Length: 398
Image 1 (cartoon, one colour):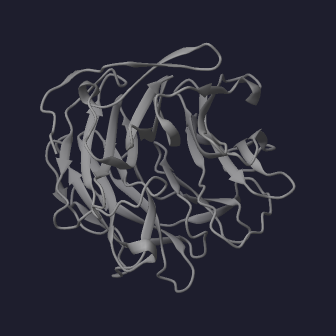
Image 2 (spheres, rainbow, N blue to C red):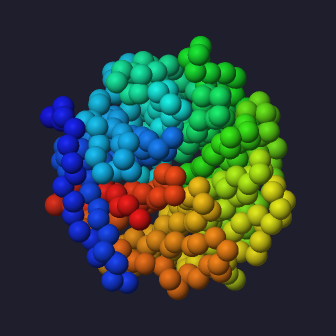
């Protein structure tokens, strides 16, 4: 694979939204593609920096190659792709929806991926790599999970806390027949993973999870519960040492006995030292199915009445909140012949209007799994799709 060893301006592509808005979208350092197919994409924002982790493979290649890049100017330019050595723990990329993860705190950057193993569809144990020099060099730092199994460990998420340490969550089957949601704490100075914690021992088998950290050590994890199949929330007040379940995020009482393959989105707005949560969730409840937005009434208390954003065809959501309290929500609207990438911006203090959602015209087919990143008071939207028979990544500054 040919790697770019220079920094350059992006070659911009023009995408026109159905509302008449003109948006600029692009890909990669100097506008160049990585060879192979993009099987995993994750982004993380820290102190104005965007950190991007990609996994690619070619043809029937079982294992994937990992690449890191970053931008210090909200995506106007990107550093060259840096490969991450996974030779001691090859990365097994199953595709979007079970993306490998990245988080950063200053020059400290951590990535976590899945290996091939004995689990469902070949899923296996986790592995991780750490950089203390802003992504220039990487060192393998082992498996976050302490159950010693080479079985199914997947649907990872990762965040950094205000002390420069990291927290991972994922699903595995250590408790027996049921998948559970577990977490681990990574201490940056010792570069070691600590003992695992249990957030919920019975959850849905195959939906992605979200973990977010506030500036005061509080952690929030959004996941799909098992019975009912509503989204649930777990909270830690002590940097992940202990967790408590905080009930459903959207109490739809959806009783369903199969995999859903749709997680949710979570954003934290910090107000006067307290966390105000915003979430997007999807339900297949027969009485009120679809995509919903929710926010908390009183920090860690009850939720406002869910606002319906779209029907069953609107899924794969994500959400972000800017420093000034503006919200951005993205999702995929599925149809029999195509997928449509949709986003909605909402200004603080106004009533949210789903009718103002914008459908983007992209230069890729079948856009999927959007990720929203807030950088100060700006938003950047990332996604992947098909282009000339390959799986590629794109982004747009909103």
